[in-house]
Amino acid sequence: MDKFVAGHKEQAPMTGERITTLEPVSVVAGYKPISDYGVIGNSFTGALVARDGSIDWCCLPRFDSPSTFAAILDTKKGGCFAIRPSSAYKSAQRYIFNTNILVTTFRTEDGSGEAEIIDFFPMLADKPQGERTEIHRVVCGVRGQMELDVILQPRFDYARIAPKIEERVNGPVAYSPTQQLALSAPALDFTVRDDTATARLSVRGGDLRPVVLIFGEAEPQGITDYHSLEKLNQTQHYWRDWVSRCQYNGGWRDHVMRSALLMKLMQYSENGTMIRALTTSLPLGKGNSENHDYRLAWIRDAALVLEAMMNAGWPMDEVEHFVLSLKSGWDQHAGSLSVVRGLNSELIPQERELSNLEGYRRTGPIHIGSEAARKLYLAPYGEVLRCWAVYRQRTGSIPPDVQQLVEPLADFIVRHWQQPDHGRTNDTDEPRQYIYSKVMCAVGLDAAMALADSIELRGDIQRWKDARESIFKVVMEKGWSDRLRSFTRYFGGDELDASALVFPLYGFIPFEHPKMISTVEQIVQNLGKSVVLRRFGRKSVARGENGSGFPSCSFWLGQYYIGAGQAHEAEQIFARMIDLGNHVSLYSEAIDPKTHQFLGNFPDALVHASLINLASGLSDGRLISLP
Image 1 (cartoon, one colour):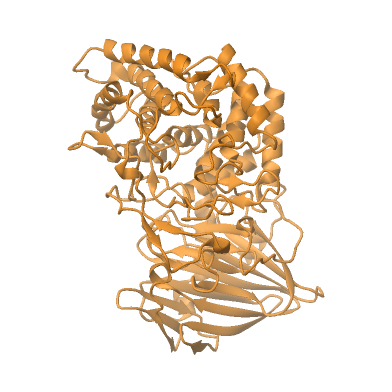
Image 2 (image 1 turned 180 degrees about the vertical axis):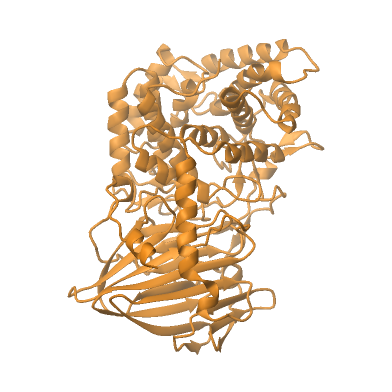
């Protein structure tokens, strides 16, 4: 244990895992800022831990399971698992260097007492992470004395089931007809009232008091049977060993590794797929009604995610795991690709609205599932093909299971690229001729042609070349607005779309093309009043997005500047965006351009992938490109 105590107190000299000044926890109408959360997980599920020591979001046993704790979506009904000081305090959070082990520090107002909570899901290299779901919370007395309240308030099935709670010898258990949850804390004297168990925990300097939450266990064992301190050391070793296998030698390594660690946490261990975020339905802004579930396997943005893996020097066996996971989106019977699927490649249920939860700061509705799987999205065909082409470029080969799908995906593009679709986002309006979709179709055909020598073609590659030329021609004509001096969001539209920044990144159009230069100028002038770019122009109000800034777009702008030979501008963007990360260098889907308040689902894998890609580009002065 002495080895661990010394290890967890090391003050890592890194901005990516900075030790912040202890501050009071801000609560507005019962809700903490989204930026106040850190994250723990085990590549099977995860949890949001606030700076006040409360686990306010956790789905067990999988990322996409119904929630067990959901106070972030309803502070009164959602349920939580909190360990927090019983009197006034200040707090801070940090990660133990190069791990996903989170440390929350509490200090009394008068400075006389200080304690820490070390939160983690065990990561044991010799056992499947889903075999047993445990959350370990080790309470450490640092100095003086501190009293903490322990509150166990589970709410199964998105708070639609209030379980029965009973006190047992080693701690309370919560159960319903279908679920069981046990808390091992035998030294604490719990009081059970209705569906909440509470206890008081007192620690002095040098005390170590683990408590362990176990999902699927009917009777808690004694605390020593869970070997918290041994698993803590094993988990620390697991994450640091994983980081040591990442072959990234560029600049800003600390920030890159923090983002890579988060993405690894969110890569589902069973099949390598990546979820977009841990949460569902955190709003993009006040009054927004299009809240979405990001705990699913979204194929959209797969190319950006793969490039981030490559750029971060991700272990190649795990990169291949991700590459192979993409093929599961192909429906052989339907002959089409699903933009989103369940974590085990299952068809996800239709999107449903939960009326029992009020939503974060009363901004509902809460949605689970997604309608996207039943709509036409063309861009993912290009995303997947580019993934496979980039993988082949780096490794020299692609798996046989992937080879056989290259031609069907490319031919689908040839047949359907002229159709309207739902674009890049979760648009709920009628399908349109979205320009981003057309461009990604062309990108996919470029990738298919790059892969042609590694597959057995049944047809002539000329059909792909012809379609690619046709797409380029129609985008340059119908996708351009002389009045705006920019590419638009869709044919005949009159608003900007910051996703145009990726067009040259994927080789669709040269960085120096006059139309691309003009488009970037208009995006910066009209969507970039802050360093955080808005995605669309002011007319896009249907999803409440017009006021939201999207960090990914800002990182894309930085990548554009690298390709355009403007490295200084890219460095400025990167530096300013780094400052907008929260206290543990995590990012949400969106950020308010004026207040810098976090918005949308959290944490967002696409944002962290985009950060990695910009850092890598700044380090070596180049971007991934296909021949």
